Length: 207
Figure 1 (cartoon, rainbow, N blue to C red):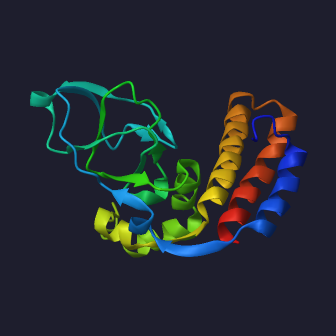
Figure 2 (cartoon, one colour; figure 1 turned 90 degrees about the vertical axis):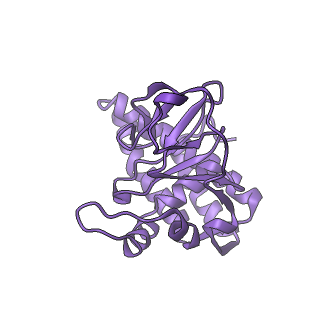
Figure 3 (tube, rainbow, N blue to C red; figure 1 turned 135 degrees about the horizontal axis):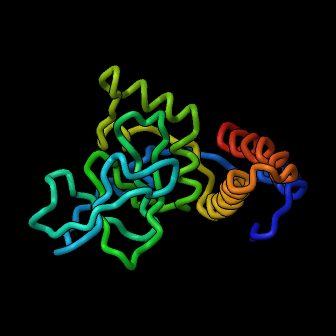
């Protein structure tokens, strides 16, 4: 829907989205399955806590079941969201997007099999107010961490399902514009767009 959206259109869409969305407050574990249980495959790629950076998997290890550490517990499915429980303020979370490669994440992540749009879910989880709430429920000082059970009990403001898909699509365009700016940081047009997109994301999630 938003594939070819320009900056001016995003500004107009901001006002439209804010005016039509109906919001409700729900616990995370009401709108997602938390840490679904599944047997590990015989061989897989393993994603540890240092292997995700701002929405991208930057490193992975190919392991057999016999080689797997005890932390290898979260069998990834397409569109699962993985939330880093340790130092959540870093926002090193990711949507798993390659179902052709068996992949297992560390138990240091909460696996969120969402019932709503994945792009909207990860944006809501990374909203500053939600992250602040996560930190309030975390333990530890140097390495604050929250348990999956505690995370699942926290509440999010979400629209109805159809509207989350709409907003999630818009967030995907926001991320693509920002990524394009990072690749082409001399492009003044994209640079001028980025503050607008970031402001749009913040406005939608805090409405």
